[in-house]
Image (cartoon, rainbow, N blue to C red):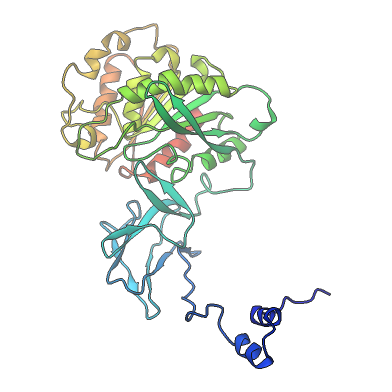
Length: 394
């Protein structure tokens, strides 16, 4: 029979040779001799009925608000209520299944949840992350799982170190066979980690592959930003990213991973800014991609508004004028097996998507386009990935 470990004050007293009276006093003392222990805080807490409770210990704070852009009904945030123990709390929901970013604003200072180790990066920020289960296509299920790796590389085009994330399917580590490659791009203000955290890309692919709905594939998630991004500022150009993508990312993948390096085994898709980058790279290099997907995006400026609908139309020739020879080349179209668009009916870029699809169809492209419910959020983009990936490499 195992002997229970002695209470720490008794052990300390024995080691220090203290008297029995002193030992008895220590035995009654709390672990933290400087004062009472702070209350135990659990945050976030997801209930079976999909209510989510957020808590933070901030006894000296005067105001605490919750910010979580995709959570329905929050708008610009929701105030927490302070308890007598100094713990602020708010419950929201029921919340639809999915991954949600959030943070707290404590007396004007944005902070992540100190009790939650799950985080999601964006281009210049870190967010806390909560997952509400209940959607089979992106839940963590008892199926074979692939791996998502963070890969650092040196960009010769940009003359600095960069990072990307790579999903390899279950069984890849066994070292057998080659795989098609899918380049998956994020949106403005996000980063290369976004698709695999808030986007649940790895779990979505795991579940699709296990159900034999999608082919096993390598998914490469690069960093689309080459510098800071400001909403309402100049439209982000795809030039620097395109240089990095063509000169460094594609060669790195084809050198270090077991992928087929031909058009019929290569796909690209992106959301919002990443959708624009998909067009700005995919159309000029149409001979290299058989599958293109554009989520909540299009050719920025095509409707007179620019990126983010703020009128930042780039000067000079239009996208259509710049690429007319490629758009009208009949030899390139048969090898393009899928050109897929999806945008929410409440998305501020819906007219951009519609105008882009119309332009492509004028040039003879067979474009699939769906208008879903919803707006410009990850709630839609995870669904689009789940619909798009099964169509690849068939």
